Length: 176
Image 1 (cartoon, rainbow, N blue to C red):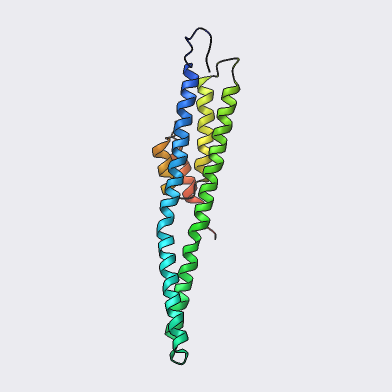
Image 2: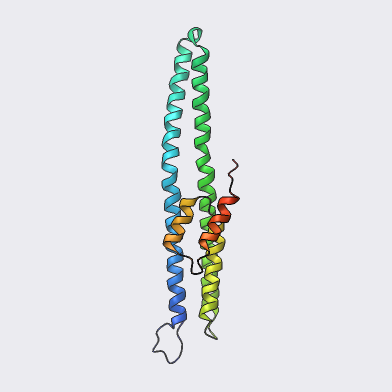
């Protein structure tokens, strides 16, 4: 936002908003990267489990008369493991949905700031708005590594992360 009399340079409030936006987008991008990295292990394990189940089924087809209870138990365990590994998809989808919602909120906030051309926004109110946006995102994160990454990339200005982390740990359960 250019103001008359400032040589065409953005004012401090606009510069600070731009910097906050850049950090917010970088934090969201890092969260997406983390979600994808967290998916690598479960996907690899799922592939291994499926290969083992296929091999076991081929063995059972080749000699159905010699199939015993132990082989069936092993196949059941592998199938159970494969189903558990599929849960990664649900967690990743939830995480990326939260990141998407956060980015949409950032875009909305930037749009609102760009429309404020008549008066300089109060810098403390602007910071508080960014902090509320960050707090809503933080509260929706699913795992401690996600919260730690956000703290590293976009630290809380109010120091509220420790309190929020305690609340999240007390009431966190995963149902799939």
